[in-house]
Image 1 (cartoon, rainbow, N blue to C red):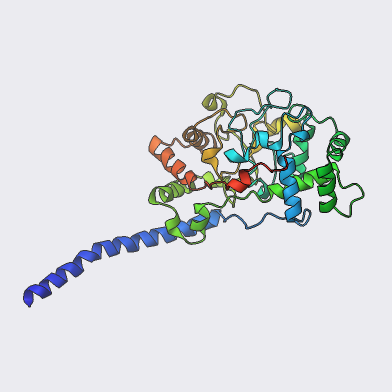
Image 2 (cartoon, one colour; image 1 turned 135 degrees about the vertical axis):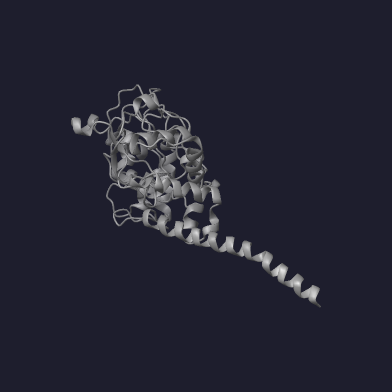
Amino acid sequence: MLAISVGMVACSGSHQPAEQDNAKNLAADKELLTKAQTFFQALPSTAEVLENPMSPEKIALGKLLYFDTRLSATGNNSCNSCHNLSTFGVDNKAFSTGDAGKLGGRNSPTSFNAAIHSMQFWDGRAKTVEEQAGMPILNPVEMAIPNEAALEKKLAAVPMYVEKFKKVFPVDKNPISFKNVALAIGAFERTLLTPSRFDKFLGGETTAMNAEEKAGLSLFMETGCTTCHSGPSLGGTMMMKFGVNTDYRPLTGSTNGDNGLMDLTKKESDKDIFKVCGLRNVEKTSPYFHDGSVKSLNDAVRIMAKTQNNKDLNPEQVTSIVKFLGALTHDIPDDVKAKPVEL
């Protein structure tokens, strides 16, 4: 009887360290979650705005236009050419190839989650995805349509578009307008939201991320990355000088002479100021920065820590942060990537 009692005590005692470890882990997870919730928010369920009410018909029309090469002068390019939905909304090139074969001057950012950003383009010259949608169409390098009327005439010659625009914009005297093209594409882009395991973590499901990713999240915050990369998109809400502490060019190898916002405003004070990119799906959207000068995400993290926060991360720290960034990836559903059957 004594032997049985001793055995029971021994077994009971053997569970205590494990229980204590579990309690510590739960407490650490709760603390990490609380801290993370001060910097980040989960993606919204919708990106709809009052200025562009969405409907299934408008979204479908927007997707057609997004994939249609008729929106370019020679028919070589569509929105999807540079912002490929099959490759996380980018083409994985430093500079995209325009309609006539010339290269653009800046790296094409992803269209996923762009609708919840406060601005569009690297110089922030457009505020909404609707405003942004029309600009590449008229850009002489990108899609090279000469003017709004030319596109309207081109689409009006397509019976499918005559029918669909009339259905989506029934009160408009001229449903096929450049404005409505941008509204439809914008409505579609507002569906391109990619919630990931990080959103589940922010919602309280702390097991949605593994220990390595949680360690990376902690280091991401400690390093000061949240100064710019916060909110639901982990960025996309502000302009910032690239190279706060040191010139980025020797680190990135950049040679293209891009002066950022200064090229738009002509103000010396705007030199090297660019939009802060969002970090959703960032492990899939290389190459990085406005000029696509860096192919490796590890290198990009190291460079940003140095240029923006004057911190020299060792390889283990860089890898840790990259592990966390991997938790921001969301597999794109096949129906989103699929080209419309009408095209």
